[in-house]
Image 1 (cartoon, helix red, strand yellow):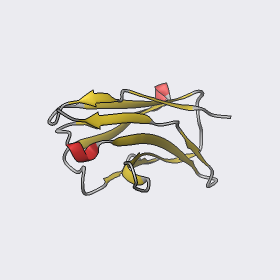
Image 2 (image 1 turned 90 degrees about the vertical axis):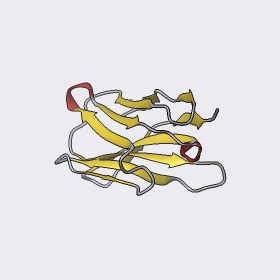
Image 3 (image 1 turned 180 degrees about the vertical axis):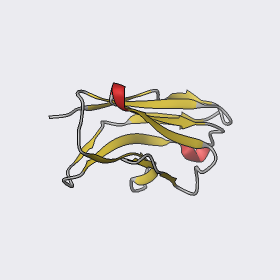
Image 4 (image 1 turned 120 degrees about the vertical axis):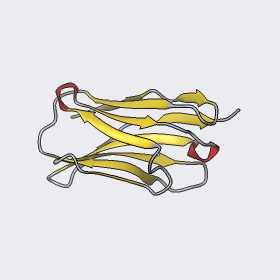
Length: 116
């Protein structure tokens, strides 16, 4: 069993930055993609950013140019650098790992609050 543990969330002022991390409890092989999702109060969970096994990335339109997803395979960790944060970025952020088999692992979520 693999555990994903997110960290780096917190309270930040508009225009500020945060870096989220998601570490896997052990090395994972046969990964298809890794991703970050956000879920704001009263809304469904939505894809924020994804990085595939070949390193290709894609982002939600709302975060393009502000957020960057990256990974460190040696550390079994995926990151989300969030810059120029806005109030509407406030949400719980979840990381996910999608396997080639179709199975997926999810973290427990980390709260990001953007407020003055």
